[in-house]
Image (tube, rainbow, N blue to C red):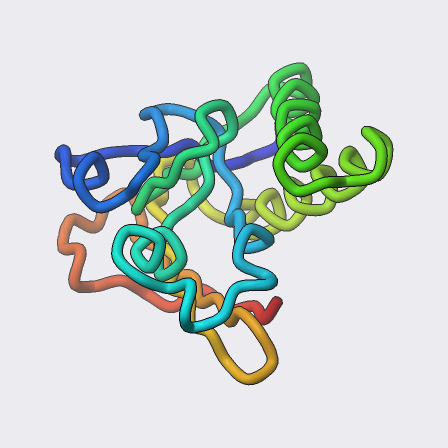
Length: 160
C-alpha cells in the first residue's frame, strides 16, 4: 500500500503562525510550488512562516508545521490528486485540468517518494530558504519511537 503524509498538530501554534492553517489529518504535500515566483519582499509575517516551514494540506490548502507518514488507499490517493489538480487550476492558473492533473501527480509522486522508506507515524518537518536559484527545501524526520523534537535528522533536500 502506498504512503503519503497527513497533517498533524501537537498544539494550537499553527493556528497563530499561519494565515490559513491546515486541518488536522489532511493529506499533505510540500507545496513549495506556491513560492516559485516569490522574492524576499514577499516573505513577511505569516507568509514568511508558511514559506519557511509549512506543509500544504490537501482540502483546506492551509499550512501545517508537521506531517506524519501514513498509508493511503488508492482511492484516497486518486481523490487527493484530483483535489490538488483542481486547486492548481483554480489558484495557480493551470491552462487545463489535464495540465493541472499532471502537475498534481508529480507533486504527489514526490511526496510518496519522500515517505516511501519511512515507517508509519514518522514525523516530517520542512525548512525552506530562498536562494539565488530559487527555493531550497530541506526535510527532517523523527522516527516514531523518538520523542525529542531537537533530535531531527536531516532526510534530504530539494531545490525548486
